[in-house]
Image 1 (cartoon, rainbow, N blue to C red):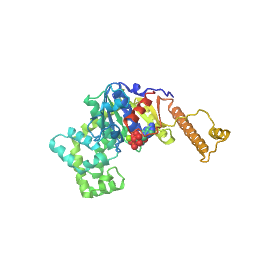
Image 2 (image 1 turned 30 degrees about the vertical axis):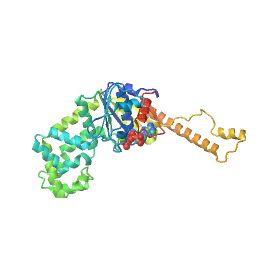
Image 3 (image 1 turned 45 degrees about the vertical axis):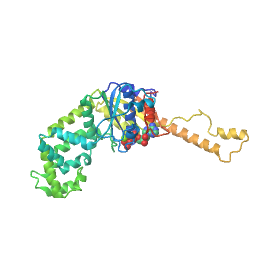
Image 4 (image 1 turned 120 degrees about the vertical axis):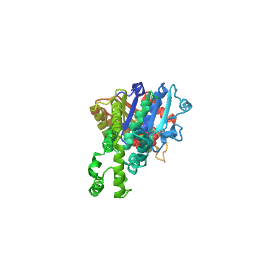
Length: 380
Ligand SMILES: Nc1ncnc2c1ncn2[C@@H]1O[C@H](COP(=O)(O)OP(=O)(O)OP(=O)(O)O)[C@@H](O)[C@H]1O
Ligand SMILES: [Mg+2]
């Protein structure tokens, strides 16, 4: 393990940085901190966040963080003690808006575009279908890279049940849109609905949440209209999914895997890292976030204060010495557990480049906190 790894330096001159990991480990925080560091060094950076809690928006001083990139006021950053040689734009993924743009681009004409945008199955697609959010995240990434407005785009990934989901999302969505499964269910003519309806209900299928809101007949009408509308767009969708896949697989992309020093997220990080490696994606580094440092005081025995007080003949009616001893022991145990977990992680992955971010006393919800995380990621 190399605690002084400069992860920001490692990612300079890449076009795409994808930050992935288990739920709640600090992906959004690390994405923002990396984007901040890259912008600070002179790059034109966009960070795409997926942060429904909007913590990041408030940290960056942006009230209405939405689908459109929003420039972070450089003064906020310099006030936090960080130079600002480049620019930092932030946006919040809006899967629906991204999906609508994709459809608008691919629809053969205005009438087809209107028809599909009004279709109820389509309207639920962008939120209801498993993988739609992940697909739109990489689609938005592609748009931004394609625009040439940025030197590097940092992508925060959605809190997925499985951190690997977003890698498969483009392919899964293409398959869904292609509608093979649905076509089979609907039969050669959509009239053969009853079996299809039952099969859809039975399967715990990914369109269930759409299904729940429509009657069987409505659903089948909308579904067949949806499939017809998409017929002309399938090729465009499929080409786009390949382009997105190529971008993710290219050497100008780096993956950063975030984890906490605990067995569960570390297990997910190990699976993710191995999968990325096996599929030949370019790996940047592992970030172990919220690590508990060895408490100050070196190897002093926990009951040192008690001895000191006793030697001085001082009374300790509040039991201060005991509480201090307990706190010290607990902090040491936590630090030891974290060290142990990090060693296991390093061993499982063959000592990958690793950046360590300590558990901060205050949530990094202000620019100053993010800048602190950036400095840790720079190994400073
Ligand atoms: N090093 C740290 N020290 C203290 N708090 C932290 C640290 N890193 C992140 N946090 C806090 O932990 C919480 C979760 O972080 P964050 O939102 O970045 O995780 P996430 O992986 O994006 O979560 P989700 O999977 O829900 O999207 C936030 O409140 C954040 O401010
Ligand atoms: Mg997040």
